[in-house]
Length: 254
Ligand SMILES: [Zn+2]
Ligand SMILES: [Zn+2]
Image (cartoon, rainbow, N blue to C red; front, side, top):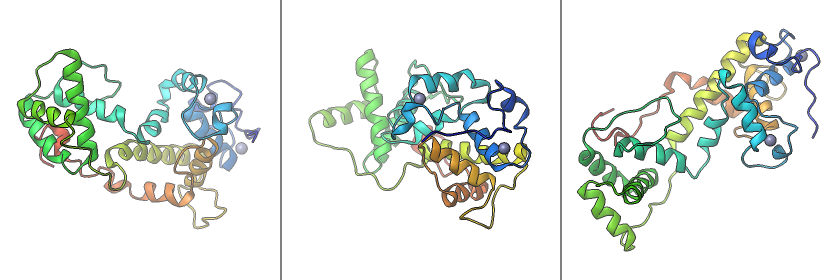
């Protein structure tokens, strides 16, 4: 499956392409190389021969190019199970000390209200359920007090009186970051390589959406079809989904 970069993209010149853009103006293969360079992941790496996470070498390479903010994490977070996302929100709602690798942090002032709102949602929403379970387990492990309603819920969970609701559809919170990363890739690829974002020729067009889809296919990431990438790109106006209010401790209504 050996992948050969375009001779014009000069990917071998360290950092050049990321800093100045590819040299092959308007070249589709350079556009694919550019998207691959943004990720840092190497399509020829052994870890890319099968589906699944990137190897440490690929992740390190992506981190080295962290100035350019590799979108790898956004793609890994979009995969279920969403344990790290659940951990993230439980830390926010529980206001626990946690290492957050994320840019945003909402301090929570009313844990009781946050727990009530979360637990109500947890009856039907599996993601809310996961957050509540994570929150309760963090409190137990650290010996922290938890809100009364959460304590009650955790006891019911341990005794088997309640169980995780079934998932319906994709987790919109998990997809939000990945889709934002895809839109950014299409935007910069189109601008720096000088190719249009989309093309009327879905099969063999040479647009930025095609280049992103092709790079994702080489990296064995989803989505890897032009149609899916284009759908995400064209839905950019309503990029922010209606996030459930339990994520904001039930304080902010959206
Ligand atoms: Zn080229
Ligand atoms: Zn690898």
